[in-house]
Image 1 (spheres, one colour):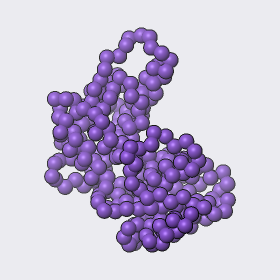
Image 2 (cartoon, helix red, strand yellow; image 1 turned 45 degrees about the vertical axis):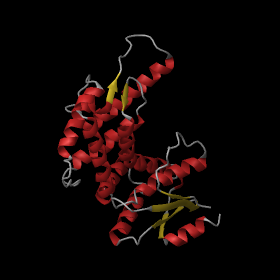
Image 3 (tube, helix red, strand yellow; image 1 turned 30 degrees about the horizontal axis):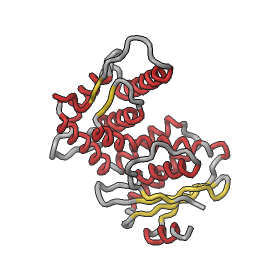
Image 4 (spheres, helix red, strand yellow; image 1 turned 180 degrees about the vertical axis):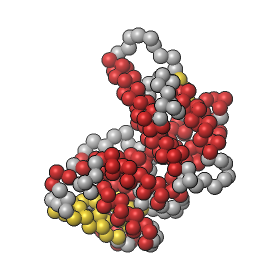
Length: 275
């Protein structure tokens, strides 16, 4: 039996996916996002399961006919995903540009929504970023663990953007204020934004949003609505990372065949409803 999932962000989102079935649904939820190539009105559903120990079958459907370029994109993405000759890092380097190129309409829409909220909050309120005073010493082991984990995510943001942009020792709140200022200048209100021409801006935004959305809340908090929009943009990196991790578990049996099938929207849900 295969699981099917239509990408519609849950409200409110579940805090965790504990069982194998829930984790599988989380993966399909994220993968379905990568099939959404239009800014609005585009819905995708996906099924992914192993037919034999060495064969993966992918079935997908959309609420409209898939274009040839979309079919090529889906094939390239999943072929790169199961390629045993690529490391996880190499797969990421290959797959992220592919996703940005083909999902640019939705990615730009989410990026613009972040900028809209940033303009609403404004510099006067530090773009919704609140930094509390940090205790010099003490604190429970749980609090210390949270701080350590938060610092690790800050280091990952620094690696993504470079120390020249986020210097060692620079508070995260200060960096974010500067980065938000730069972002709203580059993603101009009402103007066309080309993600291919501004590849570095889009890459940085996706990485920063991904790590911000997973960074534990400690001394720094982000306004709720802004955080929600940040989380949605970070989902693109989350989808790729999750796919690489889960498919990577099957590498030990050496996948020899990938079957990709496009099914009609009505047939897809007719099959789903028979379970």
